[in-house]
Amino acid sequence: MKQAISNEDLMCYLDDEMPADERKEFEEHLKLSTELQRKLAIYQALRTDLRNSNFYLANYQRSVWDQVRSKVTKRLGWILLIVGWIILTAYGVYFFLADPEESSWEKWGAGLLWAGVLALLISVIRERYKESKTDPYKDVLR
Image (tube, rainbow, N blue to C red; front, side, top):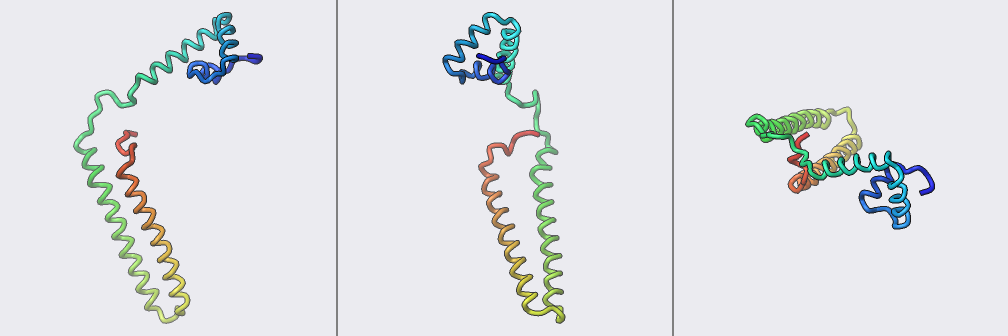
Protein backbone atom coordinates (compact mmCIF):
# COMPACT_ATOMS: atom_id res chain seq x y z
CA MET A 1 0.00 0.00 0.00
CA LYS A 2 1.80 3.04 -1.24
CA GLN A 3 -0.69 5.54 0.09
CA ALA A 4 -2.51 5.98 3.37
CA ILE A 5 -5.04 3.29 4.19
CA SER A 6 -8.59 4.52 3.78
CA ASN A 7 -11.80 3.39 5.43
CA GLU A 8 -12.72 1.75 2.14
CA ASP A 9 -9.52 -0.31 2.30
CA LEU A 10 -10.48 -1.44 5.80
CA MET A 11 -13.88 -2.57 4.59
CA CYS A 12 -12.35 -4.36 1.60
CA TYR A 13 -10.03 -6.19 3.98
CA LEU A 14 -12.91 -7.19 6.27
CA ASP A 15 -15.04 -8.38 3.35
CA ASP A 16 -12.16 -10.34 1.75
CA GLU A 17 -12.38 -8.22 -1.38
CA MET A 18 -8.76 -7.11 -1.32
CA PRO A 19 -6.31 -8.67 -3.82
CA ALA A 20 -3.71 -11.02 -2.30
CA ASP A 21 -0.72 -8.72 -2.80
CA GLU A 22 -2.50 -5.71 -1.29
CA ARG A 23 -3.79 -7.90 1.54
CA LYS A 24 -0.25 -8.94 2.43
CA GLU A 25 0.92 -5.31 2.47
CA PHE A 26 -2.13 -4.35 4.52
CA GLU A 27 -1.41 -7.04 7.12
CA GLU A 28 2.22 -5.91 7.39
CA HIS A 29 1.06 -2.34 7.90
CA LEU A 30 -1.53 -3.57 10.41
CA LYS A 31 1.19 -5.18 12.57
CA LEU A 32 3.01 -1.86 12.87
CA SER A 33 0.10 0.57 13.35
CA THR A 34 -1.92 0.56 16.58
CA GLU A 35 -4.23 3.23 15.14
CA LEU A 36 -5.05 0.96 12.22
CA GLN A 37 -5.62 -1.94 14.62
CA ARG A 38 -8.02 0.23 16.61
CA LYS A 39 -9.95 1.26 13.48
CA LEU A 40 -10.10 -2.35 12.33
CA ALA A 41 -11.48 -3.43 15.71
CA ILE A 42 -14.15 -0.72 15.49
CA TYR A 43 -15.18 -1.84 12.00
CA GLN A 44 -15.25 -5.49 13.09
CA ALA A 45 -17.52 -4.59 16.02
CA LEU A 46 -19.81 -2.56 13.75
CA ARG A 47 -19.93 -5.38 11.24
CA THR A 48 -20.83 -7.90 13.95
CA ASP A 49 -23.49 -5.62 15.41
CA LEU A 50 -25.09 -5.01 12.01
CA ARG A 51 -25.13 -8.69 11.15
CA ASN A 52 -26.74 -9.55 14.49
CA SER A 53 -29.39 -6.82 14.38
CA ASN A 54 -32.88 -7.53 13.10
CA PHE A 55 -33.97 -3.91 12.48
CA TYR A 56 -37.32 -4.35 14.21
CA LEU A 57 -38.45 -2.27 17.13
CA ALA A 58 -38.24 -4.19 20.37
CA ASN A 59 -41.63 -5.34 21.66
CA TYR A 60 -43.53 -3.63 18.85
CA GLN A 61 -46.98 -4.98 18.18
CA ARG A 62 -49.37 -3.51 15.67
CA SER A 63 -52.35 -2.04 17.42
CA VAL A 64 -55.93 -2.50 16.33
CA TRP A 65 -55.99 1.06 15.01
CA ASP A 66 -52.91 0.48 12.89
CA GLN A 67 -54.74 -2.40 11.24
CA VAL A 68 -57.93 -0.36 10.81
CA ARG A 69 -56.01 2.49 9.24
CA SER A 70 -54.13 0.25 6.85
CA LYS A 71 -57.14 -1.83 5.84
CA VAL A 72 -60.01 0.65 5.79
CA THR A 73 -58.81 4.23 5.70
CA LYS A 74 -56.46 3.92 2.73
CA ARG A 75 -58.98 2.01 0.66
CA LEU A 76 -61.81 4.37 1.60
CA GLY A 77 -59.67 7.37 0.69
CA TRP A 78 -58.81 5.94 -2.72
CA ILE A 79 -62.42 5.02 -3.40
CA LEU A 80 -63.65 8.51 -2.49
CA LEU A 81 -60.92 10.14 -4.58
CA ILE A 82 -61.72 8.03 -7.64
CA VAL A 83 -65.49 8.49 -7.35
CA GLY A 84 -65.11 12.26 -6.92
CA TRP A 85 -62.77 12.43 -9.91
CA ILE A 86 -65.19 10.43 -12.05
CA ILE A 87 -68.12 12.67 -11.10
CA LEU A 88 -66.24 15.90 -11.83
CA THR A 89 -64.83 14.55 -15.07
CA ALA A 90 -68.25 13.37 -16.24
CA TYR A 91 -69.69 16.81 -15.38
CA GLY A 92 -66.96 18.55 -17.35
CA VAL A 93 -67.29 16.18 -20.31
CA TYR A 94 -71.05 16.67 -20.44
CA PHE A 95 -70.79 20.46 -20.57
CA PHE A 96 -67.88 20.32 -23.00
CA LEU A 97 -69.78 18.07 -25.41
CA ALA A 98 -73.06 19.95 -24.98
CA ASP A 99 -71.42 23.31 -25.75
CA PRO A 100 -72.39 24.31 -29.31
CA GLU A 101 -69.52 26.80 -29.57
CA GLU A 102 -66.87 24.06 -29.51
CA SER A 103 -66.04 22.56 -32.88
CA SER A 104 -66.11 18.82 -33.43
CA TRP A 105 -62.34 18.52 -33.99
CA GLU A 106 -61.73 20.15 -30.58
CA LYS A 107 -64.12 17.68 -29.00
CA TRP A 108 -62.41 14.73 -30.71
CA GLY A 109 -58.96 16.02 -29.80
CA ALA A 110 -59.85 16.51 -26.15
CA GLY A 111 -61.60 13.14 -26.06
CA LEU A 112 -58.59 11.32 -27.50
CA LEU A 113 -56.26 13.16 -25.17
CA TRP A 114 -58.29 12.12 -22.13
CA ALA A 115 -58.58 8.56 -23.43
CA GLY A 116 -54.79 8.36 -23.70
CA VAL A 117 -54.27 9.79 -20.21
CA LEU A 118 -56.82 7.37 -18.77
CA ALA A 119 -55.25 4.40 -20.57
CA LEU A 120 -51.82 5.28 -19.16
CA LEU A 121 -53.22 5.88 -15.68
CA ILE A 122 -55.09 2.59 -15.66
CA SER A 123 -52.04 0.66 -16.88
CA VAL A 124 -49.84 2.18 -14.17
CA ILE A 125 -52.41 1.45 -11.45
CA ARG A 126 -52.83 -2.13 -12.69
CA GLU A 127 -49.06 -2.76 -12.78
CA ARG A 128 -48.59 -1.27 -9.33
CA TYR A 129 -51.42 -3.39 -7.96
CA LYS A 130 -49.81 -6.55 -9.39
CA GLU A 131 -46.44 -5.59 -7.89
CA SER A 132 -47.95 -4.82 -4.49
CA LYS A 133 -49.08 -8.42 -4.11
CA THR A 134 -45.49 -9.68 -4.27
CA ASP A 135 -43.74 -6.68 -2.73
CA PRO A 136 -41.29 -8.01 -0.10
CA TYR A 137 -41.18 -4.63 1.67
CA LYS A 138 -44.92 -4.03 2.12
CA ASP A 139 -44.83 -4.87 5.84
CA VAL A 140 -41.69 -2.88 6.63
CA LEU A 141 -42.28 -0.35 9.39
CA ARG A 142 -41.16 3.20 8.69
